[in-house]
Image (tube, rainbow, N blue to C red; front, side):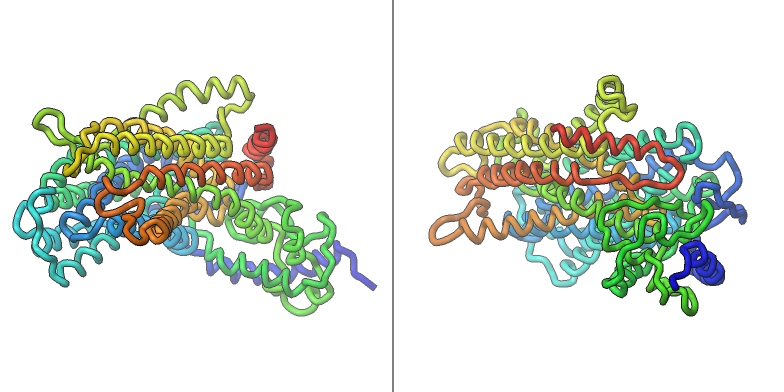
Length: 608
């Protein structure tokens, strides 16, 4: 005779308590400065009872830190493609691929930082350690460039050629730039989540402040890169590479000092423990019960009370997607025999955490093509601008500094969006947030496609103004302004929308992972860009044909490559509409108002 569901839960509850205590010891702890401990009723576990911690004063420190760290990073990254061609002797296609791979590594490292932050170290310690790595990488890069690579002095300015590089110098150079990639990549998503932690969701303005923070976070990122894209780029373009790298290192040191200065005022959230075993347990338990029929929703296993089995995390209500995974929460006779086994029986919250990751994947995959568009600013846009007319009188404009118009576009569009579009869209749609995250990401895809069309049109005009025997076209580099401005406008909608969406939808135990998905999208976008360049050159550079992206761009057709990206973005947008319509919001226990807003968003997307 089958025991009742009530008796099953009583037996399981009696066995789960000691198991839960053991699990608690595996949860990582972030640094505490006052020794206090507190668990909020909604499940968010914090270290500090001092109500004066957190808030906008702390986030201003973190925004300053982000601006300085970004200044340091882009002081290297924005002109890296020209350093590789002028100093390291690489051709255009190889340099573009090298930059794509390096930038991809930067943002791939964000997953490592997110994992350590969520699982063991906590946000604060993770941010501090990765900033130290960033400083070390910049120091090594400065030493390698001054002592081994820039010989004779002043070379790498586009006129004076550098001597062949030594193996020691090359090794130090690559070690330095990849330490920078590791340090900045691990720091950025973690500091974004740490900033969001400074606001309490239980307070009246907590959620709206978080949404505003992500907008200002991207604003600070672009303010930091503005200096790199103007002043530092100018000095590096004239051969003062070491000076640019030293200034970047100084900015990183100041950023680290500012971060540490606010240590006693931050609001700290504990690490939740390694999520990989939790997610793996769901799939293993579901597989072991493959032949078991899924129980009804009210009979699925969940601990009683408001607390979750995942210490400090809110419960997540059951959803109907991926029904086969509910087998992991279905109680069988075997589950009632012997001690509780998490590899055979998981709670609904644990199952929903795994479902959440699967639900976000289609939306996330649709953002990768956009990141391919975005990465062209650091590679082909710079190479294109380098063979245009960059002079105003006797003053030569560095091609990489044209990205200043991208930054200005971001800053202007951020202000327009916050001050005008949000109130207007809020009145029209009834949503106080204005446009929802999924809507903004869709708009970002469309604007990104238009940026590629503009870049292709500029290249057609550039080729028409090339004089025989001349390296550079007579067409002014300022014709690149539309493509840079459109990319900047698209970032405001795409990347800020991504930060809000993935951080808001990720369960409490993997918040940093949610923030890192935005950076991981940029990472894969760079790798896909590198792959596309290689494929295009492999197909088009046959026989006597130089291909679309040859050493001399005047004999190539990068306009066709831009139009190819525009076509791929248009296809991606259609797929994105289906994914956005299919997506169902994560439903946290406790009547989260954000859920209602995102559910309304699905209805809006379906009407587009």
